[in-house]
Length: 223
Ligand code: ADP
Ligand code: ADP
Image (cartoon, rainbow, N blue to C red):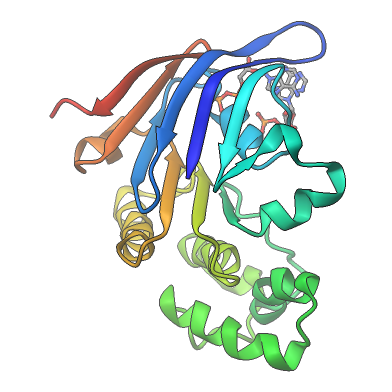
């Protein structure tokens, strides 16, 4: 699903955020990506999401060699990827329905067609009754759930999350991780970047660790 071969990323200005990183994530796998702030986690996710391009090495996503993906093809390859951010990035002046429908409308669905899938997606995250709410009327945990509903509404085979529990307390964080487990159980590949070691210590998932742009560990976190 995700394959990195000797991938390096140097930003304009000369800072090397990733240094010869190699790993792969199988279809249907769920894994965590850890490392201190500045270790390169966001950069790694941005390479997968094609918000940044590698300086060297090869990235393959769901069979696509990203070197061969032209700017015009990026939106098509991105449809395979649901992205979730720490700050959820909801449009605050739009209802929950409009926020979650957005990826479908971009794909060319009519609102009428989209609505059913939005409803189903919101039910999966436990917010089936919040269609007409505005994000401001929701708690932080609920807002993050809306962000997840938006990421999964077009049923991508891969979910990427960048510090999805960063603003949440441990109980709400555990609930959010449970949601990712639900999607993983039905076959979705999941990669979650977090510096919250306490969160992953309680779970038995593969953990990829970055330090100063290098992959230093790829395996189960020691209990
Ligand atoms: P993490 O997500 O682990 O905190 P990041 O990938 O965000 O790490 O950042 C890794 C390093 O790359 C940091 O030192 C950061 O300042 C730097 N960096 C990130 N984005 C850019 C950019 N667009 N230009 C220059 N440096 C950047
Ligand atoms: P995120 O939490 O998504 O990694 P950041 O707060 O690290 O976001 O960065 C916000 C934006 O600024 C991103 O587009 C990132 O690439 C860019 N950025 C981060 N660090 C630097 C840096 N040292 N120099 C220039 N741009 C940076």
